[in-house]
Length: 158
Picture 1 (cartoon, rainbow, N blue to C red):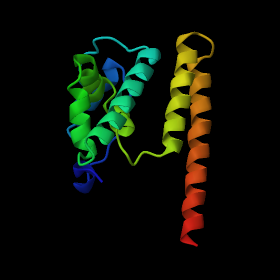
Picture 2: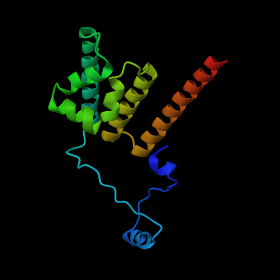
Picture 3: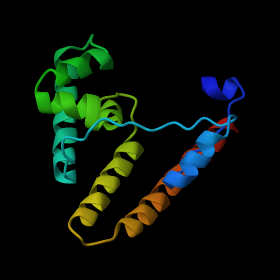
Picture 4: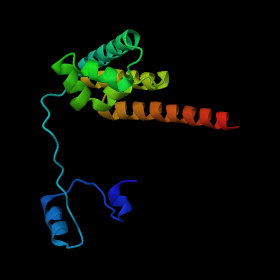
């Protein structure tokens, strides 16, 4: 639960017309926030994302063998120091993926989902399938994973 929810603040996010925003701002009981995002230098093609993931994994395994006393965070620091591109990938553009693929607790099922997601996005980028079809495909994969995971949890708790 976040701080706003604990404080009894509720809300929603939606795209609005300038007229609707002006209407909401006129209401003293409403706070409208403008979302500000960091500028994107460039969108990485999925082939480059895959290359960065593979390099991060290669380096992760190398450092685990070379430095058995290092924890995952120390290994991540070493990987991020290898290049400006890897630092940007691991701290800005794909931070969550980087953290997941450089974590010894990540399961093979998660790697499989990630690989399927990358392959699906590459098909979108090449024009072979639509983004809507890709979302439907990934939704099916994620739901299947979740169903298996919950089934495994239930089986273990018996």
